[in-house]
Image (cartoon, rainbow, N blue to C red; front, side):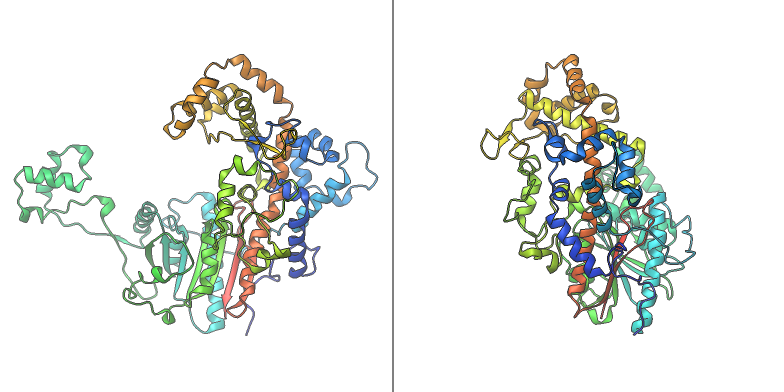
Length: 593
Protein backbone atom coordinates (compact mmCIF):
# COMPACT_ATOMS: atom_id res chain seq x y z
CA UNK A 1 0.00 0.00 0.00
CA UNK A 2 1.50 3.31 -1.04
CA UNK A 3 2.21 6.18 1.32
CA UNK A 4 -0.32 9.02 1.33
CA UNK A 5 1.04 11.80 -0.86
CA UNK A 6 0.01 14.55 1.56
CA UNK A 7 1.61 12.92 4.59
CA UNK A 8 4.58 14.87 5.98
CA UNK A 9 7.90 13.22 6.74
CA UNK A 10 7.09 13.14 10.45
CA UNK A 11 4.06 12.11 12.45
CA UNK A 12 4.45 15.29 14.51
CA UNK A 13 6.27 18.53 13.57
CA UNK A 14 8.60 18.28 16.60
CA UNK A 15 11.92 20.06 17.12
CA UNK A 16 15.10 18.81 15.48
CA UNK A 17 16.48 18.27 18.98
CA UNK A 18 14.47 15.03 19.11
CA UNK A 19 15.25 11.97 17.01
CA UNK A 20 11.72 10.54 17.01
CA UNK A 21 8.10 11.31 17.84
CA UNK A 22 8.30 8.97 20.83
CA UNK A 23 11.33 10.80 22.25
CA UNK A 24 9.52 14.12 21.82
CA UNK A 25 6.29 12.88 23.44
CA UNK A 26 8.06 11.44 26.49
CA UNK A 27 10.05 14.65 26.97
CA UNK A 28 6.92 16.80 26.52
CA UNK A 29 5.00 14.85 29.17
CA UNK A 30 7.94 14.90 31.55
CA UNK A 31 8.42 18.67 31.16
CA UNK A 32 4.74 19.62 31.52
CA UNK A 33 4.47 17.41 34.61
CA UNK A 34 7.68 18.29 36.42
CA UNK A 35 8.59 21.89 35.55
CA UNK A 36 7.34 23.91 38.52
CA UNK A 37 7.79 27.19 36.66
CA UNK A 38 5.83 25.97 33.66
CA UNK A 39 3.00 24.73 35.87
CA UNK A 40 2.83 28.04 37.68
CA UNK A 41 2.81 30.11 34.49
CA UNK A 42 0.32 27.78 32.78
CA UNK A 43 -2.54 27.57 35.22
CA UNK A 44 -1.33 29.22 38.43
CA UNK A 45 -1.74 32.94 37.65
CA UNK A 46 -4.88 35.01 37.50
CA UNK A 47 -4.56 38.69 36.61
CA UNK A 48 -7.39 39.77 38.94
CA UNK A 49 -5.29 38.54 41.86
CA UNK A 50 -2.06 40.16 40.72
CA UNK A 51 -1.87 43.04 43.25
CA UNK A 52 -4.20 41.83 46.01
CA UNK A 53 -1.34 40.41 48.10
CA UNK A 54 2.08 41.76 48.95
CA UNK A 55 4.73 41.67 47.70
CA UNK A 56 2.59 40.57 44.74
CA UNK A 57 2.52 37.64 42.36
CA UNK A 58 5.62 38.70 40.43
CA UNK A 59 7.98 38.93 43.41
CA UNK A 60 6.53 35.93 45.21
CA UNK A 61 6.40 33.46 42.36
CA UNK A 62 8.83 34.42 39.57
CA UNK A 63 12.34 33.03 40.24
CA UNK A 64 14.32 35.73 42.02
CA UNK A 65 17.28 35.56 39.62
CA UNK A 66 14.93 36.33 36.67
CA UNK A 67 13.25 39.40 38.10
CA UNK A 68 15.74 42.18 37.37
CA UNK A 69 16.25 41.03 33.77
CA UNK A 70 12.51 40.77 33.09
CA UNK A 71 11.76 44.21 34.53
CA UNK A 72 14.49 46.04 32.68
CA UNK A 73 13.39 44.79 29.24
CA UNK A 74 10.84 46.69 27.18
CA UNK A 75 7.86 44.40 26.44
CA UNK A 76 8.63 43.91 22.74
CA UNK A 77 12.33 43.34 23.48
CA UNK A 78 11.34 40.71 26.02
CA UNK A 79 9.07 39.01 23.47
CA UNK A 80 11.96 38.92 21.00
CA UNK A 81 14.17 37.31 23.64
CA UNK A 82 11.53 34.71 24.43
CA UNK A 83 10.64 33.74 20.88
CA UNK A 84 13.03 35.04 18.24
CA UNK A 85 16.55 35.81 19.50
CA UNK A 86 19.33 33.33 18.76
CA UNK A 87 20.16 32.01 22.23
CA UNK A 88 22.94 29.76 21.00
CA UNK A 89 25.21 32.79 20.54
CA UNK A 90 25.00 33.82 24.21
CA UNK A 91 28.36 33.60 25.95
CA UNK A 92 28.57 31.37 29.04
CA UNK A 93 30.46 34.20 30.80
CA UNK A 94 27.84 36.88 30.42
CA UNK A 95 28.13 40.27 32.08
CA UNK A 96 25.61 42.60 33.78
CA UNK A 97 22.27 42.88 32.00
CA UNK A 98 22.55 39.41 30.48
CA UNK A 99 19.77 36.86 30.99
CA UNK A 100 20.39 34.42 33.85
CA UNK A 101 21.31 30.90 32.82
CA UNK A 102 18.18 29.35 34.39
CA UNK A 103 15.92 31.70 32.35
CA UNK A 104 17.78 30.89 29.13
CA UNK A 105 17.41 27.20 29.89
CA UNK A 106 13.65 27.63 30.51
CA UNK A 107 13.17 29.55 27.25
CA UNK A 108 15.04 26.84 25.35
CA UNK A 109 12.84 24.18 26.98
CA UNK A 110 9.65 25.96 25.90
CA UNK A 111 10.95 26.41 22.36
CA UNK A 112 12.01 22.80 21.91
CA UNK A 113 8.74 21.42 23.30
CA UNK A 114 6.60 23.66 21.09
CA UNK A 115 5.54 21.99 17.85
CA UNK A 116 6.98 23.67 14.76
CA UNK A 117 4.54 25.95 12.94
CA UNK A 118 6.28 26.66 9.61
CA UNK A 119 3.96 26.20 6.64
CA UNK A 120 4.23 24.96 3.07
CA UNK A 121 1.09 24.95 0.85
CA UNK A 122 -0.25 21.53 -0.18
CA UNK A 123 0.10 22.58 -3.82
CA UNK A 124 2.30 25.25 -5.43
CA UNK A 125 -0.76 27.02 -6.83
CA UNK A 126 -4.25 26.66 -5.43
CA UNK A 127 -7.51 27.74 -7.11
CA UNK A 128 -8.49 31.32 -6.34
CA UNK A 129 -11.86 31.60 -4.64
CA UNK A 130 -14.43 33.18 -6.98
CA UNK A 131 -15.95 36.38 -5.62
CA UNK A 132 -19.37 34.69 -5.36
CA UNK A 133 -17.91 31.94 -3.13
CA UNK A 134 -15.74 34.30 -1.04
CA UNK A 135 -18.71 36.48 -0.05
CA UNK A 136 -18.62 37.32 3.66
CA UNK A 137 -15.04 36.13 4.17
CA UNK A 138 -12.36 38.32 5.69
CA UNK A 139 -8.75 38.03 4.56
CA UNK A 140 -7.96 35.50 7.32
CA UNK A 141 -10.91 33.32 6.37
CA UNK A 142 -10.02 33.43 2.65
CA UNK A 143 -6.52 32.21 3.53
CA UNK A 144 -7.86 29.40 5.73
CA UNK A 145 -10.54 28.23 3.33
CA UNK A 146 -8.31 28.41 0.24
CA UNK A 147 -5.54 26.32 1.77
CA UNK A 148 -7.69 23.87 3.72
CA UNK A 149 -9.99 23.16 0.77
CA UNK A 150 -6.92 22.41 -1.36
CA UNK A 151 -5.51 20.23 1.42
CA UNK A 152 -8.76 18.27 1.84
CA UNK A 153 -9.05 17.76 -1.92
CA UNK A 154 -5.54 16.33 -2.18
CA UNK A 155 -6.01 14.15 0.90
CA UNK A 156 -9.29 12.79 -0.50
CA UNK A 157 -7.59 11.94 -3.80
CA UNK A 158 -4.88 10.02 -1.94
CA UNK A 159 -7.45 8.09 0.10
CA UNK A 160 -9.50 7.24 -3.00
CA UNK A 161 -6.40 6.01 -4.88
CA UNK A 162 -5.31 3.89 -1.93
CA UNK A 163 -8.74 2.42 -1.24
CA UNK A 164 -9.99 2.27 -4.82
CA UNK A 165 -13.15 4.07 -3.73
CA UNK A 166 -14.09 7.75 -3.58
CA UNK A 167 -15.27 9.41 -0.40
CA UNK A 168 -19.01 10.10 -0.65
CA UNK A 169 -19.40 13.01 1.80
CA UNK A 170 -17.46 15.51 3.90
CA UNK A 171 -19.00 16.21 7.32
CA UNK A 172 -18.17 19.67 8.67
CA UNK A 173 -18.43 19.78 12.47
CA UNK A 174 -19.71 23.23 13.48
CA UNK A 175 -19.98 24.64 9.96
CA UNK A 176 -21.05 28.18 10.98
CA UNK A 177 -21.56 30.21 7.81
CA UNK A 178 -20.29 27.16 5.88
CA UNK A 179 -17.44 28.96 4.12
CA UNK A 180 -15.39 25.75 3.87
CA UNK A 181 -18.34 23.60 2.78
CA UNK A 182 -19.45 26.11 0.15
CA UNK A 183 -15.93 26.18 -1.29
CA UNK A 184 -15.65 22.39 -1.38
CA UNK A 185 -19.11 22.06 -2.98
CA UNK A 186 -18.21 24.58 -5.70
CA UNK A 187 -16.00 24.01 -8.77
CA UNK A 188 -13.30 22.81 -9.09
CA UNK A 189 -13.87 20.57 -6.03
CA UNK A 190 -17.57 19.63 -6.40
CA UNK A 191 -17.72 17.69 -3.13
CA UNK A 192 -20.84 16.54 -1.28
CA UNK A 193 -20.99 18.40 2.03
CA UNK A 194 -22.91 17.67 5.23
CA UNK A 195 -22.87 20.90 7.26
CA UNK A 196 -23.64 20.29 10.95
CA UNK A 197 -24.53 23.49 12.81
CA UNK A 198 -26.34 24.10 16.10
CA UNK A 199 -27.36 27.72 15.50
CA UNK A 200 -30.25 28.15 13.07
CA UNK A 201 -29.32 31.79 12.47
CA UNK A 202 -25.91 30.67 11.17
CA UNK A 203 -27.57 28.10 8.95
CA UNK A 204 -30.04 30.65 7.54
CA UNK A 205 -27.16 33.01 6.76
CA UNK A 206 -25.22 30.17 5.12
CA UNK A 207 -28.16 29.31 2.87
CA UNK A 208 -28.44 32.96 1.77
CA UNK A 209 -24.77 32.82 0.79
CA UNK A 210 -25.40 29.53 -1.06
CA UNK A 211 -28.01 31.33 -3.15
CA UNK A 212 -25.66 34.22 -3.90
CA UNK A 213 -22.89 31.79 -4.87
CA UNK A 214 -25.17 29.90 -7.27
CA UNK A 215 -25.15 26.64 -5.30
CA UNK A 216 -28.84 27.03 -4.45
CA UNK A 217 -31.88 28.84 -5.79
CA UNK A 218 -34.35 30.91 -3.87
CA UNK A 219 -37.72 29.26 -3.50
CA UNK A 220 -40.09 30.71 -6.06
CA UNK A 221 -43.07 32.53 -4.58
CA UNK A 222 -46.48 32.52 -6.27
CA UNK A 223 -48.86 35.16 -4.94
CA UNK A 224 -51.77 37.47 -5.80
CA UNK A 225 -49.66 40.63 -5.79
CA UNK A 226 -52.62 43.06 -5.92
CA UNK A 227 -54.23 41.50 -2.84
CA UNK A 228 -50.89 41.16 -1.09
CA UNK A 229 -50.06 44.86 -1.46
CA UNK A 230 -53.56 45.77 -0.24
CA UNK A 231 -52.89 43.81 2.98
CA UNK A 232 -49.44 45.40 3.38
CA UNK A 233 -50.88 48.92 3.10
CA UNK A 234 -53.33 48.15 5.93
CA UNK A 235 -50.65 46.65 8.21
CA UNK A 236 -48.20 48.47 10.48
CA UNK A 237 -44.79 48.44 8.68
CA UNK A 238 -43.14 46.93 11.77
CA UNK A 239 -45.27 43.79 11.26
CA UNK A 240 -44.71 43.26 7.52
CA UNK A 241 -42.61 40.17 8.27
CA UNK A 242 -45.09 38.76 10.81
CA UNK A 243 -47.19 36.14 9.02
CA UNK A 244 -49.82 35.93 11.77
CA UNK A 245 -50.24 39.72 11.89
CA UNK A 246 -50.72 39.84 8.11
CA UNK A 247 -53.37 37.10 8.34
CA UNK A 248 -55.26 39.03 11.04
CA UNK A 249 -55.32 42.16 8.88
CA UNK A 250 -56.42 40.10 5.86
CA UNK A 251 -59.41 38.74 7.78
CA UNK A 252 -60.29 42.25 9.00
CA UNK A 253 -60.36 43.32 5.34
CA UNK A 254 -62.79 40.50 4.55
CA UNK A 255 -60.31 38.33 2.63
CA UNK A 256 -61.70 34.82 2.32
CA UNK A 257 -59.76 31.64 3.07
CA UNK A 258 -59.78 30.82 -0.65
CA UNK A 259 -58.25 34.22 -1.47
CA UNK A 260 -55.77 33.91 1.41
CA UNK A 261 -54.58 30.62 -0.08
CA UNK A 262 -53.44 32.56 -3.18
CA UNK A 263 -51.05 34.69 -1.11
CA UNK A 264 -47.73 33.51 0.29
CA UNK A 265 -47.28 35.59 3.45
CA UNK A 266 -44.02 34.03 4.64
CA UNK A 267 -41.12 36.39 5.28
CA UNK A 268 -37.95 36.15 3.20
CA UNK A 269 -36.18 34.38 6.08
CA UNK A 270 -38.78 31.63 5.97
CA UNK A 271 -38.29 30.97 2.28
CA UNK A 272 -36.37 27.78 1.61
CA UNK A 273 -33.23 27.54 -0.47
CA UNK A 274 -33.61 24.77 -3.04
CA UNK A 275 -30.67 22.59 -4.03
CA UNK A 276 -30.64 20.74 -7.34
CA UNK A 277 -28.64 17.50 -7.42
CA UNK A 278 -26.75 17.15 -10.70
CA UNK A 279 -24.22 14.55 -11.77
CA UNK A 280 -20.65 15.83 -11.33
CA UNK A 281 -21.66 18.84 -9.22
CA UNK A 282 -21.23 19.37 -5.51
CA UNK A 283 -24.08 19.48 -3.02
CA UNK A 284 -24.73 20.80 0.49
CA UNK A 285 -27.02 19.26 3.07
CA UNK A 286 -27.61 21.11 6.34
CA UNK A 287 -28.24 19.31 9.60
CA UNK A 288 -29.46 21.26 12.62
CA UNK A 289 -28.15 19.79 15.81
CA UNK A 290 -25.96 20.44 18.82
CA UNK A 291 -23.42 17.66 18.98
CA UNK A 292 -22.85 16.40 22.52
CA UNK A 293 -20.90 13.31 21.50
CA UNK A 294 -19.22 11.69 18.50
CA UNK A 295 -22.06 9.31 17.55
CA UNK A 296 -23.36 10.60 14.20
CA UNK A 297 -26.38 8.33 13.88
CA UNK A 298 -28.77 11.26 14.39
CA UNK A 299 -26.88 13.37 11.84
CA UNK A 300 -26.80 10.63 9.23
CA UNK A 301 -30.51 9.91 9.58
CA UNK A 302 -31.21 13.42 8.28
CA UNK A 303 -29.40 12.90 4.99
CA UNK A 304 -31.28 12.51 1.75
CA UNK A 305 -32.30 8.89 1.29
CA UNK A 306 -31.50 7.98 4.91
CA UNK A 307 -34.72 9.10 6.58
CA UNK A 308 -35.77 5.64 7.79
CA UNK A 309 -32.55 3.79 8.48
CA UNK A 310 -28.90 4.68 8.17
CA UNK A 311 -27.04 2.33 5.83
CA UNK A 312 -23.51 3.23 6.86
CA UNK A 313 -22.01 0.63 4.54
CA UNK A 314 -22.89 2.80 1.55
CA UNK A 315 -21.31 5.91 3.03
CA UNK A 316 -17.60 6.74 2.97
CA UNK A 317 -17.19 10.07 4.74
CA UNK A 318 -14.47 12.37 6.01
CA UNK A 319 -14.99 14.52 9.13
CA UNK A 320 -13.47 17.96 8.61
CA UNK A 321 -13.44 21.27 10.44
CA UNK A 322 -11.63 24.58 10.53
CA UNK A 323 -11.46 25.78 14.13
CA UNK A 324 -14.27 23.76 15.63
CA UNK A 325 -14.80 25.12 19.11
CA UNK A 326 -13.82 23.28 22.26
CA UNK A 327 -15.01 19.70 22.44
CA UNK A 328 -16.26 19.70 18.84
CA UNK A 329 -12.70 18.86 17.83
CA UNK A 330 -12.81 15.84 20.14
CA UNK A 331 -16.14 14.73 18.66
CA UNK A 332 -14.77 15.03 15.14
CA UNK A 333 -11.68 12.96 15.97
CA UNK A 334 -13.65 10.36 17.92
CA UNK A 335 -16.21 10.07 15.12
CA UNK A 336 -13.83 7.91 13.07
CA UNK A 337 -13.58 5.40 15.91
CA UNK A 338 -17.31 5.31 16.68
CA UNK A 339 -18.91 5.49 13.22
CA UNK A 340 -18.22 2.86 10.51
CA UNK A 341 -19.00 5.38 7.76
CA UNK A 342 -16.29 7.87 8.82
CA UNK A 343 -13.19 6.81 6.91
CA UNK A 344 -10.96 9.81 7.66
CA UNK A 345 -10.71 12.95 9.80
CA UNK A 346 -8.91 16.24 9.28
CA UNK A 347 -9.59 18.59 12.20
CA UNK A 348 -8.09 22.02 12.98
CA UNK A 349 -9.08 22.91 16.54
CA UNK A 350 -9.28 26.15 18.51
CA UNK A 351 -11.04 27.62 21.56
CA UNK A 352 -9.17 25.38 23.98
CA UNK A 353 -10.76 27.30 26.87
CA UNK A 354 -14.13 25.81 25.84
CA UNK A 355 -12.91 22.23 26.19
CA UNK A 356 -13.99 20.35 29.28
CA UNK A 357 -11.76 18.35 31.61
CA UNK A 358 -11.85 14.57 31.94
CA UNK A 359 -9.71 14.13 35.04
CA UNK A 360 -10.74 15.48 38.41
CA UNK A 361 -8.57 17.67 40.66
CA UNK A 362 -5.06 16.26 41.22
CA UNK A 363 -4.62 13.90 44.13
CA UNK A 364 -1.47 15.79 45.15
CA UNK A 365 -0.91 19.48 45.82
CA UNK A 366 1.32 20.74 43.01
CA UNK A 367 3.96 23.38 43.61
CA UNK A 368 2.50 26.83 42.97
CA UNK A 369 -0.96 25.21 43.09
CA UNK A 370 -2.56 28.49 44.05
CA UNK A 371 -5.89 27.93 45.79
CA UNK A 372 -6.99 31.29 44.39
CA UNK A 373 -7.72 29.56 41.09
CA UNK A 374 -10.94 28.16 42.54
CA UNK A 375 -12.58 31.18 44.19
CA UNK A 376 -11.30 33.53 41.51
CA UNK A 377 -12.56 31.44 38.66
CA UNK A 378 -15.33 29.17 39.88
CA UNK A 379 -15.53 27.54 36.46
CA UNK A 380 -12.12 25.97 37.11
CA UNK A 381 -13.50 24.02 40.06
CA UNK A 382 -16.86 23.24 38.46
CA UNK A 383 -15.33 21.86 35.25
CA UNK A 384 -12.71 19.79 37.04
CA UNK A 385 -15.38 18.21 39.24
CA UNK A 386 -17.51 17.23 36.23
CA UNK A 387 -14.96 14.69 35.03
CA UNK A 388 -16.43 14.89 31.54
CA UNK A 389 -15.44 11.71 29.63
CA UNK A 390 -15.49 13.77 26.41
CA UNK A 391 -12.95 16.29 27.74
CA UNK A 392 -9.16 16.67 27.84
CA UNK A 393 -7.12 14.53 27.77
CA UNK A 394 -8.42 12.20 25.04
CA UNK A 395 -5.59 9.67 24.96
CA UNK A 396 -4.91 6.94 27.48
CA UNK A 397 -1.21 7.90 27.45
CA UNK A 398 -1.81 11.45 28.69
CA UNK A 399 -4.73 10.43 30.94
CA UNK A 400 -2.60 7.97 32.90
CA UNK A 401 0.88 9.49 32.68
CA UNK A 402 2.71 8.84 35.98
CA UNK A 403 -0.51 7.13 37.11
CA UNK A 404 -2.29 10.44 37.79
CA UNK A 405 -2.47 11.92 34.29
CA UNK A 406 -1.75 15.40 32.95
CA UNK A 407 -4.22 18.22 33.65
CA UNK A 408 -4.76 21.61 32.04
CA UNK A 409 -7.18 23.96 33.77
CA UNK A 410 -9.10 26.66 31.93
CA UNK A 411 -6.49 29.33 32.72
CA UNK A 412 -3.77 27.32 30.99
CA UNK A 413 -6.00 26.44 28.04
CA UNK A 414 -7.14 30.04 27.60
CA UNK A 415 -3.51 31.20 27.42
CA UNK A 416 -2.87 28.63 24.66
CA UNK A 417 -5.03 30.78 22.36
CA UNK A 418 -2.86 33.92 22.69
CA UNK A 419 -0.45 33.55 19.70
CA UNK A 420 2.28 35.84 21.15
CA UNK A 421 4.41 35.52 17.98
CA UNK A 422 1.83 37.72 16.24
CA UNK A 423 1.59 40.45 18.88
CA UNK A 424 2.39 43.94 17.63
CA UNK A 425 3.68 46.75 19.83
CA UNK A 426 0.35 48.59 19.64
CA UNK A 427 -1.72 45.49 20.42
CA UNK A 428 0.59 44.51 23.28
CA UNK A 429 0.44 47.97 24.81
CA UNK A 430 -3.36 47.88 24.59
CA UNK A 431 -3.97 44.60 26.36
CA UNK A 432 -1.18 45.11 28.90
CA UNK A 433 -2.90 48.36 29.83
CA UNK A 434 -6.32 46.71 30.03
CA UNK A 435 -4.98 43.96 32.31
CA UNK A 436 -3.19 46.55 34.46
CA UNK A 437 -6.45 48.46 34.93
CA UNK A 438 -8.30 45.24 35.83
CA UNK A 439 -5.69 44.24 38.41
CA UNK A 440 -5.49 47.65 40.11
CA UNK A 441 -9.29 47.97 40.25
CA UNK A 442 -9.50 44.62 42.08
CA UNK A 443 -7.01 45.98 44.63
CA UNK A 444 -9.28 49.01 45.09
CA UNK A 445 -12.27 46.72 45.54
CA UNK A 446 -10.39 44.76 48.21
CA UNK A 447 -9.27 47.87 50.09
CA UNK A 448 -12.76 49.42 50.09
CA UNK A 449 -14.58 46.22 51.12
CA UNK A 450 -16.29 45.29 47.85
CA UNK A 451 -14.50 41.95 47.91
CA UNK A 452 -12.84 40.11 50.76
CA UNK A 453 -9.71 38.10 51.37
CA UNK A 454 -10.01 34.34 51.75
CA UNK A 455 -7.45 32.23 53.61
CA UNK A 456 -6.90 28.59 52.68
CA UNK A 457 -4.67 27.78 55.63
CA UNK A 458 -3.51 29.68 58.69
CA UNK A 459 -4.29 33.40 58.55
CA UNK A 460 -0.75 34.08 59.69
CA UNK A 461 0.40 32.81 56.28
CA UNK A 462 -0.02 35.90 54.10
CA UNK A 463 1.62 34.42 50.99
CA UNK A 464 0.05 34.55 47.54
CA UNK A 465 -0.32 30.77 47.73
CA UNK A 466 -2.51 30.84 50.84
CA UNK A 467 -4.81 33.78 50.12
CA UNK A 468 -7.24 34.76 47.41
CA UNK A 469 -10.25 37.00 46.87
CA UNK A 470 -13.79 36.71 45.53
CA UNK A 471 -13.22 39.07 42.59
CA UNK A 472 -15.73 40.98 40.52
CA UNK A 473 -15.40 39.83 36.89
CA UNK A 474 -16.54 42.85 34.89
CA UNK A 475 -15.95 41.77 31.30
CA UNK A 476 -15.47 44.27 28.49
CA UNK A 477 -16.30 47.97 28.67
CA UNK A 478 -16.86 50.60 26.00
CA UNK A 479 -13.74 51.63 24.08
CA UNK A 480 -13.60 55.08 25.68
CA UNK A 481 -13.34 53.48 29.13
CA UNK A 482 -9.77 52.42 28.30
CA UNK A 483 -8.49 55.94 27.55
CA UNK A 484 -7.39 56.36 31.21
CA UNK A 485 -7.55 54.55 34.52
CA UNK A 486 -10.08 57.07 35.85
CA UNK A 487 -12.32 56.44 32.82
CA UNK A 488 -11.97 52.68 33.38
CA UNK A 489 -12.95 52.91 37.06
CA UNK A 490 -15.93 55.17 36.31
CA UNK A 491 -17.03 52.90 33.45
CA UNK A 492 -16.78 49.80 35.64
CA UNK A 493 -18.79 51.41 38.44
CA UNK A 494 -21.46 52.50 35.97
CA UNK A 495 -21.73 49.00 34.52
CA UNK A 496 -21.90 47.32 37.92
CA UNK A 497 -24.61 49.67 39.20
CA UNK A 498 -26.84 49.89 36.11
CA UNK A 499 -26.50 46.63 34.20
CA UNK A 500 -29.11 44.05 35.23
CA UNK A 501 -26.59 41.23 34.69
CA UNK A 502 -24.65 42.58 37.70
CA UNK A 503 -27.60 43.15 40.03
CA UNK A 504 -25.85 41.26 42.85
CA UNK A 505 -23.22 44.02 42.95
CA UNK A 506 -25.50 47.08 42.66
CA UNK A 507 -25.83 47.78 46.38
CA UNK A 508 -22.29 47.04 47.49
CA UNK A 509 -20.71 49.00 44.63
CA UNK A 510 -22.96 51.99 45.29
CA UNK A 511 -22.17 51.86 49.01
CA UNK A 512 -18.42 51.19 48.83
CA UNK A 513 -17.42 52.93 45.58
CA UNK A 514 -20.06 55.62 45.07
CA UNK A 515 -18.07 58.32 46.89
CA UNK A 516 -14.63 57.59 45.42
CA UNK A 517 -12.88 60.71 44.22
CA UNK A 518 -10.74 61.32 41.17
CA UNK A 519 -7.84 62.07 43.51
CA UNK A 520 -8.06 58.62 45.10
CA UNK A 521 -8.22 56.94 41.68
CA UNK A 522 -5.10 58.84 40.62
CA UNK A 523 -3.36 57.83 43.87
CA UNK A 524 -3.94 54.13 43.12
CA UNK A 525 -2.68 54.52 39.57
CA UNK A 526 0.43 56.34 40.78
CA UNK A 527 1.08 53.69 43.44
CA UNK A 528 1.03 50.82 40.96
CA UNK A 529 2.20 52.50 37.74
CA UNK A 530 5.81 51.40 38.21
CA UNK A 531 4.65 47.80 38.65
CA UNK A 532 2.89 47.58 35.32
CA UNK A 533 6.07 46.03 33.90
CA UNK A 534 5.66 43.18 36.40
CA UNK A 535 2.30 42.35 34.90
CA UNK A 536 3.38 42.64 31.26
CA UNK A 537 6.43 40.44 31.94
CA UNK A 538 4.37 37.70 33.58
CA UNK A 539 1.66 37.85 30.91
CA UNK A 540 4.34 37.53 28.20
CA UNK A 541 5.89 34.56 29.99
CA UNK A 542 2.44 32.95 30.35
CA UNK A 543 1.56 33.34 26.67
CA UNK A 544 4.99 32.14 25.55
CA UNK A 545 4.88 29.12 27.87
CA UNK A 546 1.38 28.23 26.70
CA UNK A 547 2.75 27.40 23.24
CA UNK A 548 3.62 24.11 24.95
CA UNK A 549 0.05 23.82 26.22
CA UNK A 550 -1.26 23.91 22.66
CA UNK A 551 1.39 21.40 21.61
CA UNK A 552 0.29 19.07 24.42
CA UNK A 553 -3.39 19.32 23.39
CA UNK A 554 -2.59 18.54 19.75
CA UNK A 555 -0.23 15.71 20.71
CA UNK A 556 -2.92 14.21 22.94
CA UNK A 557 -5.33 14.12 19.97
CA UNK A 558 -2.69 12.48 17.80
CA UNK A 559 -2.01 9.90 20.51
CA UNK A 560 -5.71 9.09 20.78
CA UNK A 561 -5.77 8.12 17.11
CA UNK A 562 -2.49 6.22 17.37
CA UNK A 563 -3.83 4.21 20.30
CA UNK A 564 -6.67 2.91 18.09
CA UNK A 565 -4.33 1.17 15.66
CA UNK A 566 -6.87 -1.62 15.11
CA UNK A 567 -9.09 1.00 13.41
CA UNK A 568 -6.67 3.75 12.39
CA UNK A 569 -4.23 2.93 9.61
CA UNK A 570 -2.31 6.20 9.75
CA UNK A 571 -2.38 9.49 11.65
CA UNK A 572 -0.27 12.62 11.78
CA UNK A 573 -0.18 16.36 12.52
CA UNK A 574 0.98 19.11 10.17
CA UNK A 575 0.47 22.81 9.49
CA UNK A 576 -2.14 23.96 7.00
CA UNK A 577 -2.09 27.78 7.38
CA UNK A 578 0.48 30.52 7.61
CA UNK A 579 0.89 31.24 11.35
CA UNK A 580 0.92 34.98 10.69
CA UNK A 581 -2.51 34.72 9.04
CA UNK A 582 -4.04 32.06 11.29
CA UNK A 583 -2.07 30.86 14.34
CA UNK A 584 -4.30 27.87 15.09
CA UNK A 585 -2.74 26.13 12.11
CA UNK A 586 -2.20 22.48 13.12
CA UNK A 587 -4.43 19.83 11.56
CA UNK A 588 -4.88 16.40 13.14
CA UNK A 589 -5.36 13.77 10.42
CA UNK A 590 -6.49 10.18 10.75
CA UNK A 591 -7.07 7.54 8.03
CA UNK A 592 -9.12 4.41 8.75
CA UNK A 593 -7.91 0.92 7.86
